Every structure is written in structure tokens, then in C-alpha cells.
Length: 172
Image 1 (tube, rainbow, N blue to C red):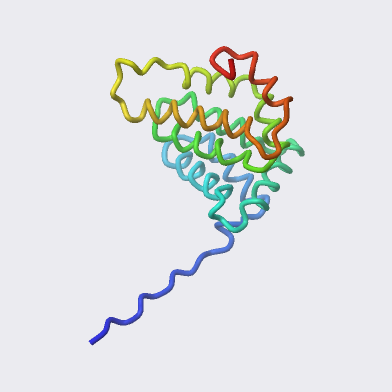
Image 2 (image 1 turned 45 degrees about the vertical axis):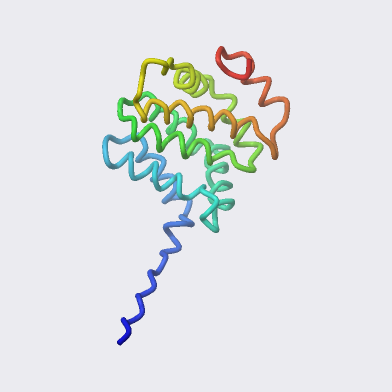
């Protein structure tokens, strides 16, 4: 006797390739409290992750929102780094690390955000020698991954590295 076949889960295309209005709404939710912000950052991370077949289109849509000054996902994700919730910070850092993948304009945009760079520097420069906190270690590693993503190839250039050099704890 065999078991019936497992039903195939349908993927809702709108969840992996949203409209510009839906994407702007997700960015606005990043400014909300609690679960709303956590769901929004998780969604945005998934939209630009390379497992998503539409990640490049989603990335370009986010860039167009930035260029049109409709919504700046980098600013909103950076704002999450000042919250006390470490889990939320970890997700925000994951999204920030994935966002500039293969996108020179986004890398330059991120490198020109002094507030975000300062928040990343603070996370990277935390002395963990007397700490066994897994979350603290992960925050430091993920913050370093964001800096690496902004300054890595492909599509990086000397401009990005020179913007990061002036910050203590970054590319010294």
C-alpha cells in the first residue's frame, strides 16, 4: 500500500515579484513596531535573495524607488539597526547584505549613507572577548557581511572602498 502523493504547494507569484505599490508598502512597514516590521524585513530579504527567480527585477524595482525618492529601503533597514530587538537587527543585516548583490548603483547608494555606515561600524567594533552571546557574535558577522557586500566585486569600484576607508573600524 502506498501513500497518496503529497500535494504540490503553489507559489503565489505576487509574493516573489510584487508590484511597485506593494513593495513601497513593505518598505513603509519597516517603520512599524513589532511583528509588522519583522514580517516586512523578512519579506524584503526574500525578494532580493538569489533563490528567488525574480531577485534581479525586485532589486531594480527597489533601485527605481530609491532613485525616484519614493521610498529608500536602505534608510528603513538601517533604522532597524538602532532598535533593541537583536532578531530584527539580524534580519535587517541579512537584507542589507543581499541588497547590493550585482548592483553597483545600490552599492554606491549604500556607501553614501553615513548613518548606516556608523551603525555598521558600531556593530563590527563591539568587543566580544568577554561575551558568549550568539546573537552579538552574529550581529558582528552580519554587519561585516554588509560592508563586504558593498565593497566586493562584481560591480564594485574604488569609489566604494574610498567612501568606507574614512570610517574608523572599516577597511583600515
